[in-house]
Length: 149
Image (spheres, rainbow, N blue to C red):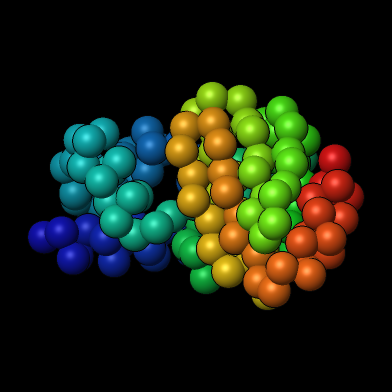
């Protein structure tokens, strides 16, 4: 049942604009799947669904493969402007302070930025550490971060 339901979710997300969990639950009900909000939430997490913007800044669910590098960069730039409080570095580690509760989401975008110099991130509630390699590349990453906002 779970596999069939998740295949149906994948099909719906690919063919239709689904903006909310409620819309997804309604569409699944119309397709013969009686689901709860908790089930939808688990499926979204397990499937790695993300929200992307449509024209007009409307958000919709998308499959991870649908998101281009450009889309990630746009999301990174927008989130950076909205949540970053400050950033600094020491040696080959850049520390980024965010509004509480936003570090992990921003770290995910940084992980998927395609920046070869960033070999990993560690995120807590309001702090992210970027590990940079080689150490000399800190300036390059620092400049990119500065250009985000």
